[in-house]
Image (cartoon, one colour):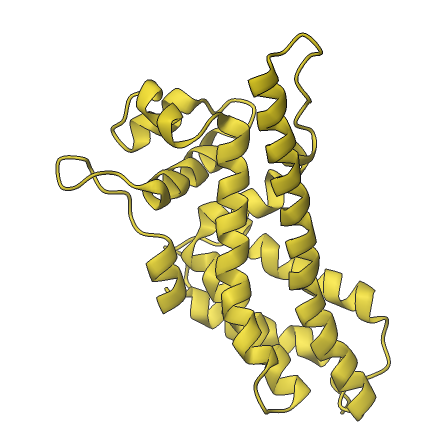
Length: 226
């Protein structure tokens, strides 16, 4: 696991050892979401995963929707923090893209539950319903804040995609890459990388690092000029 993700996602600790913090809950929530799916997962399930009562969990997160958003935000920010130094480095576009692909896939294989949430739970995030007209002012305000955070998440996701598109465009302009549609290529690239978190198994015959290396070469073959 990369140093960034070691710091961002830790194995959940039991309160007997020390108090459960926000990151513990986020990681536990990701595991429960992967196991049960968003619709079936409950706050009680997530609380039990970190030895909390459901009532205690509500002190940290207002509801399952805000907890799902926190899982996705944490995963996205961890990945962006890995990508930005690479895009700013002084190396060829091919080397940048190779490093970005490898870093992304290793991060996903190190955190498969968070990676799976990024694939399967985006639709649930988009479909969160507004409170009824009879809802309290507090509930309406909470939803407005949630919606603003959700919009910011999707804008941030677009920024993440733009890091890859930027490198692809640079490679096309420099003549390293074939003149492809950078939007379609980037989304194909990211789709392949994200899906690794769904099919990867830690006990499989290839490590995350090995898969990352092989996929980087395969994905680059489609764009680097021979």
